[in-house]
Image 1 (cartoon, rainbow, N blue to C red):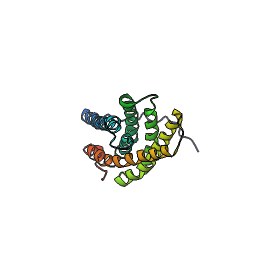
Image 2 (tube, helix red, strand yellow):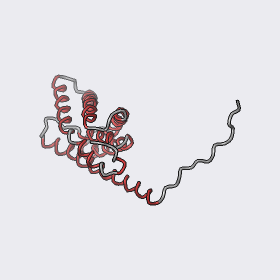
Image 3 (cartoon, rainbow, N blue to C red):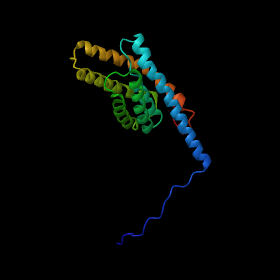
Image 4 (tube, helix red, strand yellow):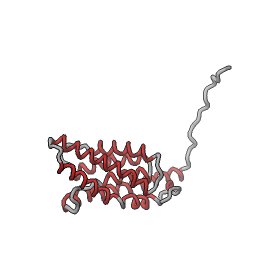
Length: 193
């Protein structure tokens, strides 16, 4: 048997027409705008509205719900980019001490993106993935409590449960809103709500 030793032909990507390239750039700009506005609104709500006014017993982590919604509605790279950007934004407007939010959200986005690729893009999938997200957030809260030097007690566990409950309830509308916001984008016509 002889091996094919001929060089592969020079395969280039076909050039896109300027109109198609402009449409792709416009679609990316729309995505960035939609995700930036969502991050701005939810980040401000999380860091100022819910933490200052004490409407909830604990401050909910709305950015987790946003990252999950983007991972389901768009793609994993968008979710990871959003996670890092939102982490820096959260630390800028409400952070105190060590700024680990970009890393924490990025790790979350990597994990949730890998899992969400195997699931249907639907609200029940969002609900199903929100439960391990709350467990992840509880783990982060307990870890930060230990790193600060506090002991884990029954009060700490109640705090973690209240935080998870508030996060779950307030993240419920995030997926339908992001679904509607990303629906006009041309690449999402195949998805069903």
